[in-house]
Length: 389
Image (cartoon, rainbow, N blue to C red; front, side, top):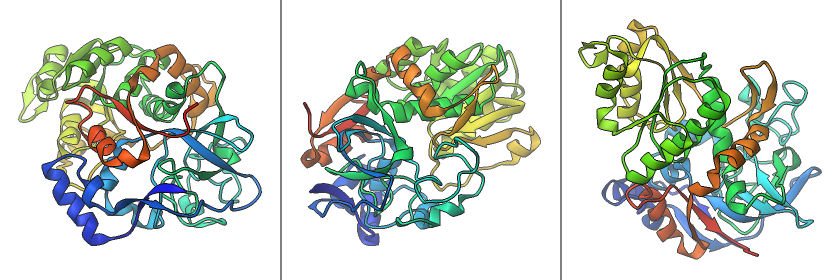
């Protein structure tokens, strides 16, 4: 089968890191990602299924990997060579459409569930990542045993698969994974009724978070940072009350709160900030604009960086990570998994509109460049398309 394969070639990885600073996405041309003919992944055992991807997204973590920007923290949590791609809607062996919940959880590795009905992302001990009949890997798309959505076949455990309703388009189905991530971040924020929230970034994850905040919490004012006209339009449509340029966010929050400046920090600020960017500058903004004893949710995958945390200490800010999805507790006390909730959010918010461009695998350099330049090119989600009807 054909697949885009990411190998452990340090020289190529370093070349991608250098090249991508000059031209975004160029890491897909000079980095350790190559289109090759490889054997399909073997089914590891009972409960595993073969999936043929139809649409697979290119997300921020994928771009960080192929551009040589990902943190070395992940080195022991992946196995090489791997086929990237974890935002997947595909066809199983019986011809049914399935959406992939890519986290390789306890069930996929033959470990006991942390509690009855647990989602793949649940649990408080990541030791299971080293177990089971498959190689190391946090998700499908970062595991050498499973393949990924940037190939013609992958294998997934039945605990990771969700049947796609007939009335769902493929575009809607491929948005389930990022929507679930946005829901997880919005609910991890623990928004009190009427609370003020800033979402930094209006890419896919920022927009999904805005939609989830408006649909699933009682947030008061939602302020979003967006660089480009289409992002400003989408953020407003999905529930933002105010959209500002990233460079103006401190000034905008100061005006909104009616507070003063203490050096580079606001004297007060919003109750909650969701950082959907994960850059050193966005983390600094999040800490500066969140009120003392407020909460910062880090949704965007951060780069390795140096950040001054003195303000975090002095302001007693709560810093919360939001990685993927899991079992959620809703404001009314009910529980549901992020993916179960994502079906309703994608449908009600029309998140399929975020899918902006499709490419076949053999045009992967163009696709990765387009994804890396999505904002200035008026796009949001770029996907690979295979086996169209």
